[in-house]
Length: 114
Image 1 (tube, rainbow, N blue to C red):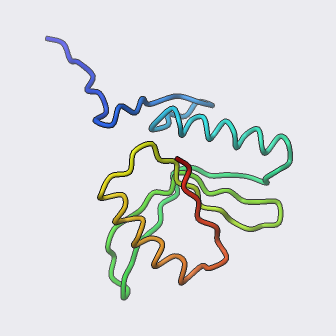
Image 2: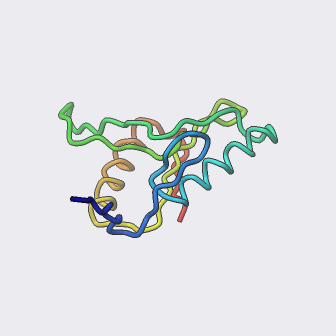
């Protein structure tokens, strides 16, 4: 008996970079770009797959995993979502995220990389 690895339904290929597995080549490429920006002293640091708890009226709706959180040299934060294909579920979660997060943290930059 043998097993065939199932392909991602959006044709994303898991990619390794820096000893970590990323969901797609696009994400791994963005991580590489962020590392170059750190070396160039353009940004201070970055994190990947940061969990954000989405709550409405103190009730947990769902978790949203932000692809990257970038800390700029001035201490400001930028939340970055790297997308190759936008699903309906993702669009809905993103709208909820924007509505909640922009109200609570208007100083944080939200970016979608397509």
